[in-house]
Length: 235
Image (cartoon, rainbow, N blue to C red):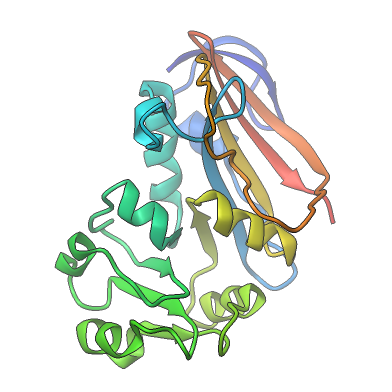
């Protein structure tokens, strides 16, 4: 990736070729006090839209963003995604454990093609889709994280209990809001593509509850107008 390294704790600044090893160094993750590291990766337009004009994130993905997307997946032990995002973006098997967060207990059909044990549902005890999910996935692949409301702190603890220490969240905006609200996110990765997408589209964080989270920038790359950054969540 031919880029300008605008700021980095692990890669020298300036025009450079960032190979796979240098990219891995740039995204080297520390470990939090509980032994986990939870990073969330998102993409937006310059004016803050997390979707293209058709309402799908894939519309604003570009080559630099896709490279980082796949790299971050390769570094992770498990991927966490909201059911709405998995459905809208037509998620399929990820080749590694994928946790789908759904208060309704829903899993999109394409994910059901994954080998048993690769897809895990995180839901609540009163989810209407819970019986069907248990039958499709197996009881051991369903996390019950509350009765009616999702306990996202419990989600982090359950991921750690299953031995997954490097966690990658891929949204969507409502799930990211909930994760940030309870303080379980360690790092935000964000690609800003050089486009403006007008209209009433979701931002990368969407929710009714007010939210103010301080961030510490540790990486900023640029390629052909695309900005790729890392921010650590301040304690």
